Length: 570
Image (cartoon, rainbow, N blue to C red; front, side, top):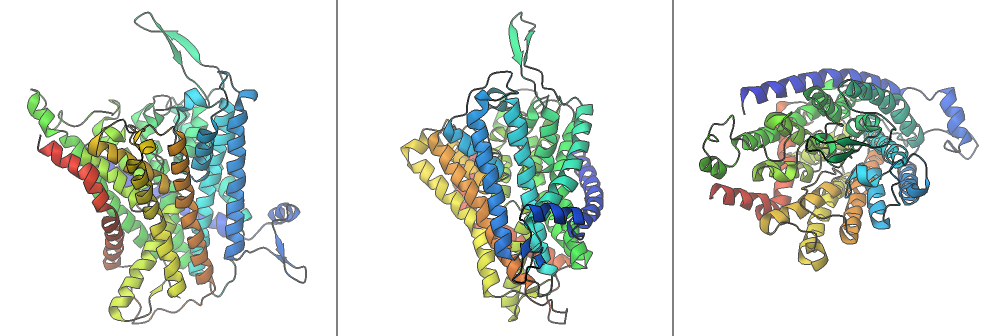
């Protein structure tokens, strides 16, 4: 790692932690404030406030009611977005006369944006109308992000509430996440991006004359508004096919820095929110420290390998032997360079964002391995909005369980006893995505219809399939671009993977939260495992890496690891 790479990392993290802390103060105030009379009237009129047997209003929901509300909310969004794509050819705000999207691609895209994955098997500027981009994709970016935040707060309440049957009201949580958190911050980010040159227009595409005397059609659109929530909500779906590598989405190093901060902002604030609500800020700082430790290690591997480049290529061409000029620039934008591209790639795959300012398929084998591994760890290295925190808390519960086994004591976390039901939910939440990734990859590489999408042979082709299912099942959305994923087979397989990866984790998390909320919160005693120490940070980070290594190293050995050996062996 060069001095420049180190300085950029330090500036990024310091800025992130300051902004994240102050945002957490606001988020806790919004999410935990008493229900206002206006909210009560609105949601009571909509039938979203329950009543007990005596007819008295019951604002809170148990975990089953909360889960049903979350699933129903997202199902409605999926159906609406699916229908919008099928009908876009007959709807307004379509200056380029985009036709209806094929049913399988429309279904895949609807699932993708509903699950906060934003996997895109299409080029946005050549497939989606302005109305679909604004009313469908951008809107779903808000709704899916709100879902993650709501579930995270439900789990936090489960950990800190004492003998409570309720986790809050899902409808009110979703309303507050969207109206009071995501919308105002997105407006600020959109204005900042527009100041850097990100476009925002409803004008039709324009034809320009090139320097060679030909004609080129320039795609336009309402980009800044979608770009803001795409990053803030860790969604990642770009308005243009090349995503944040496109100069209309990400024109300058300043816009690049803003976008990187936006990705990690809410995941960081949620860690501080955990500390505030638990009554011990150190609890949140410990989770954040674990995420940061893993992130720094991942970034070091990526940037070091990208700066080193391909040693065989460097030895073949005169002038490419100096480390400052021999790095791997393939697939990267000159205006960002290797360091900023490496940092962006590490951030976007540490979070379940999936936005890219460089092509991950062109990274060195170990650089690409890290982007893949961060998804395979469960997107808990900061992770997506909400999803990163509740995923890491599953690992925290597992870590205290393992420690409890070693000392012969019932494990506790934040004063809540961890018993068989809780561990079943933890294991289910942690294993569902890896199983989906490995099974989906296996089916794709051994069937003819799956092999038809491979544009690269051998280990790299395997890596592209493994990356696709790692991205889909862990709701990231980025891709190794050499896979032809717009087919009925991959649209359906990846769509199913996204659904399983999203709700196969959310449902166990809410069940865990409901069980914990009903338990008393025990006082700390001499036998309680401290969960705010550097030792616990190491234990938690080790648990995350151990699960990932045991699950995915054999598969990674068939892809990026053997590619790295081939590269070093010329």
